[in-house]
Amino acid sequence: MLDTANTLDTKQMTTVNKPAQKPKNPGFSCGPTAKRPGWTFDAIKGALLGRSHRAKEAKVKLQQIIDLSRETLGIPADYKIAITAASDTGAVELAMWNLLGARPVDVFAWEAFGKDWVVDIIDELKIPNARKFVPAYGQLPDMKQANPAHDIVFTWNGTASGVKVANADWISDNREGLTICDATSAVYAMPLPWDKLDVVTYSWQKVLGSEAAHGMVVMSPRAIKRLETHTPTWPVPKIFRITKKGKVNEAFFTGEVINTPSMMCVEDVIDALNWVKSIGGAAGMVQRNQANYKVLADWIERTPWVDFLAQDPATRSTTSVCFVFTDPDYLKLNDEGRAAFAKRINSLLEKEGAALDANSYRDAPPGLRIWVGSTVETSDVQALLPWIDWAFATAKSELRAAA
Image (tube, rainbow, N blue to C red; front, side):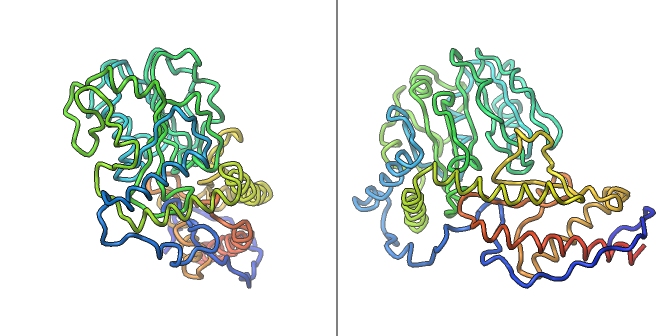
């Protein structure tokens, strides 16, 4: 039962009828995300199941992922691209374990996953003179505090907070350190300034809508130079080891992954990348994401009982849109009551099959988190909104009835 320890306004609640139309795809999870439009199991019928990833045919497919990624994202020709194990997390860890330690580090974090990098840098790697910048949920740190003489670690888009960097103007063109950017929920949805980024990591399971467990790391010539001029003072686990005798292992950047990949997932991401290519590459993906975001943002702006968790419009995520409830009755509830209210709304949406996995992240303020990345159809976002209206009205009526 919802917490009713606080006094509630008992004014008549407007009835909202249950909508007739549901989203064709109710998957609004922030990862793994919705598959590309029209996806069926036929997309992976060419998978090299039961084959070694070192076989000639498998190597061709792994190289195809790298080539399609470069083409569709417009990655500069002198940047190196590799496939990693352990999704985006593995890609970020690989970069930090190999590259950090040569300089002090400034790490910026404004949600759960960015805070993991803070722990790694300060508590695990124990980088001397490391600085952390961690604001409250919904806010962005002062990115201008970044020291161009330091290495910089940050997420482009905070999936759990719905907060992104507005741009990369704060990154110096004359920086001495490296910029390591966790861009997993931004790549293919938000334009990235490659000249400002020395390391970019992401996973197949985010904006591409492909399967989990595999990540990507993109490294600039400056990052490659660091690999060959800096030896970490800590042991580097085999799963992260990308140099040999002080030189970059070039095979790593030609599809020879350190850990065995799933060839089923490989086939699936090739399908996703070919779809991206067919709609105009990254530019087409950004356009789709912007259309989805506009539908949701317009609804939030005209709905009096919700608001963005990110208050600054320039820092609002366009993929993982996080919003909180602002209704006066809701605000009178204590923390437990607010969490229960948000949980009830999510439960109603799931029970009706209107939205799956749309709950806010576990340590974020109670609310909803709707993924509207590039594989989501705008028509599904439009169909979802009346269901949220209905679920809110239903939960509020139950709250008042219990008061």
